[in-house]
Amino acid sequence: SQQGEEDPQALSIQEGENATMNCSYKTSINNLQWYRQNSGRGLVHLILIRSNEREKHSGRLRVTLDTSKKSSSLLITASRAADTASYFCATDESGTSYGKLTFGQGTILTVHP
Amino acid sequence: ETGVTQTPRHLVMGMTNKKSLKCEQHLGHNAMYWYKQSAKKPLELMFVYNFKEQTENNSVPSRFSPECPNSSHLFLHLHTLQPEDSALYLCASSPRGVDEQFFGPGTRLTVL
Image (cartoon, each protein chain N blue to C red):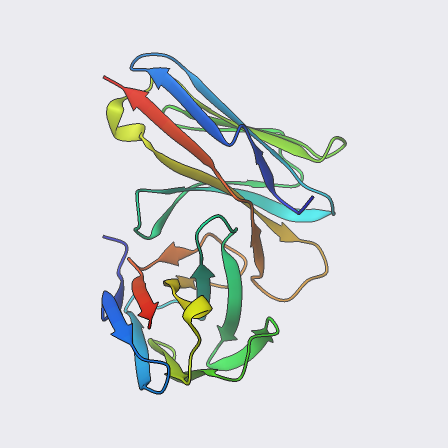
């Protein structure tokens, strides 16, 4: 398996429900980031959590980081149809080149109105 | 709108053509990146530039040639590509290289 694996690969929910996506990684990191991508377009940065942080909030987003388990979760509360997109975690690994991020394969989230 | 623009948005080229992709950012960022996104594969980092200097070449074939003439512009020169090079090519920039990255909309490349 590879650095930054998301789980599940696909998630389908109803509007108003919460969506939780998980990310696992293998090496020590400086930070972990979550991005969203609407179909065939560029990625949009959602949130960055540093290795010494355990939880971070931004609007309806909540990210947790457990460095002992090498895992992170992204929670989107009160989902909307507009949240339909692919979500990627990306790790900034310790000791690697300046600004080198490793992305996972992503979770495809579908929110039904 | 993230402030990172890419042209062209779509490109179809033959295997013997030479073309260039252009990326531009006026965000004052010091780091710029090229990524390749193929179907069913994770986003692959290709090149990293910091302060116009290439700091990462992720074992990219020589038929892809990057150029960073200044801190606002990044090019990807393409020649004698293969059909498997068909993908979405994304450019990104970052303030200091250790922060979040801002992505352009991408160039959808098809190699016939």
